[in-house]
Image (tube, rainbow, N blue to C red; front, side, top):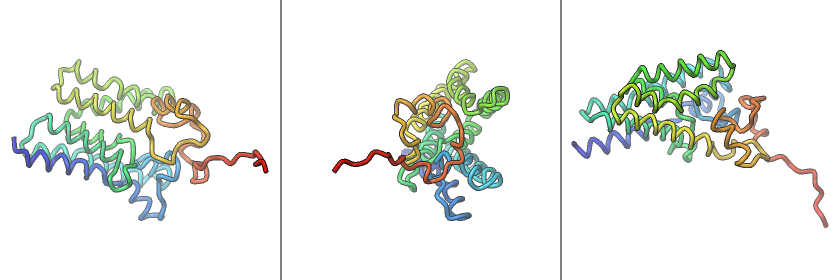
Length: 234
């Protein structure tokens, strides 16, 4: 194994994964910081909600192809095995979620994860979307069913006899997703709610509240702490 190759692919995976596609789309098209709107997520869904469906398609395509598929194929082309390919995929997802270019804020990693899993074991990626979209169509709750799909992913990889590196990758995806949902991006939490109140909705639905409401259409003022009406004593 060439240690230089390993260093190059792992560092480049994180740096490429960290390219804030949705942030750049908002900044270049409308001069807006998408982290201050809607979910505060630097990803395709929030870009689509704030900028329009064409931006959703553009951001998703770049994140899947460049940030997801790219690092895995680069690692493979350099002759490194499945373990390093899987690790490159996870680092790309970590870069997307905690971008070094945005003060370690970012997205949720779904598109980057989709691309890397397509490059590793494409049918597992298809399975995630079948469960997520089919369940979402039946219950009108895509977020919950994608959470279920991610929870089942390591088990599905193990039961289908995938290499241990792929099973570990799937478990890593689940852990990274849970960590990002719980931590969120600074300044995007719903005002007035404690961590205990937001933890379970974040894990299940990827939002701070049980009811969706206008969550994806929030404006910057909606993210500010609400002023109290209590008068200060003299």
